[in-house]
Image (cartoon, rainbow, N blue to C red):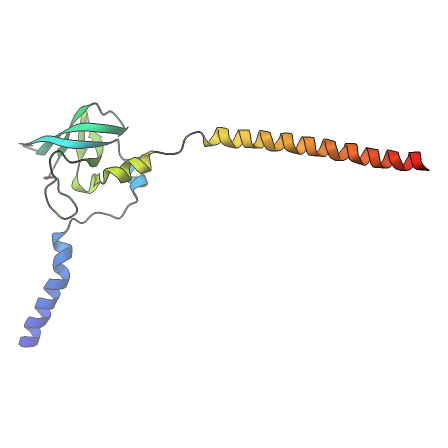
Length: 165
């Protein structure tokens, strides 16, 4: 009897953390950003309950993707929580990924992320193509100059041998 109780207690301790924590699929942030219709870094300015869940009003600090203005309302079917299942704080920077449902932005807790991570994924280096082209042009010029100099030297050596004979 004591062994069964101990086994149940141990099993409940092992399974409890996963039952309490937010369970989101392990998808890289860049893939989630590609799949989202809108993304931004913003701060919760207000929230209200509606029949279909909660509507959060965000003040947008930086738009990352999609139709997002300075302020935006985003609907969620459930109350938004962080990774520790605590309600999100107002006036704290937050990375938000959302999808369009008609003309309305919709999100969920698993689509919230660290603002720094969202901005780093969205800031792709620009201008790499032109850098490669400029590098290839410089390489071609250096090779052409080197080949020309080698031909001139070879001609001078061959010409010098004929003159000396």
